[in-house]
Image 1 (cartoon, rainbow, N blue to C red):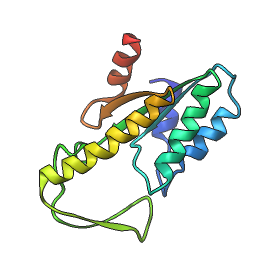
Image 2: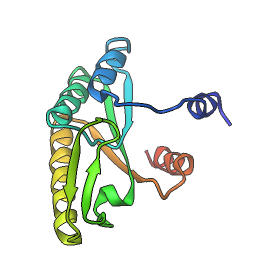
Image 3: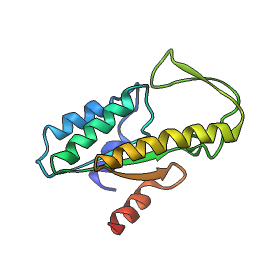
Image 4: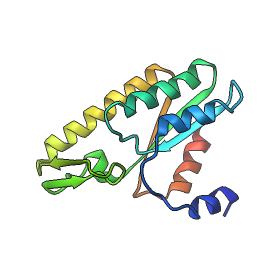
Length: 148
């Protein structure tokens, strides 16, 4: 395994991460025409998605290459609807949402959100790539990089 994967394996995820702030931090330290790749589920509280679109769009606007790689669980894609109930947001303690058990309704809401986000990102010159958690990430990334 490479050094990057060993480093990532040693990390313990906790709390919420502000993707837009991370993009802005990295972008401020990279060459003008650099490449910035964000791996994220691209889920967030109201306003967070817009901030990510703006931050990645700013990288593309200055001549850099901005790529958003969305890594999603099949439930997050709307392929499988969650069981009806009240769900806590692990990244934002104290925040919860209800889910109904109608798979079509859930899938439509999820697809609508991500279609809108994808259009906004692409309109700003950001490439959007999708991976699911049921795929092995490294082989999937290798195939994607090989296709470029």
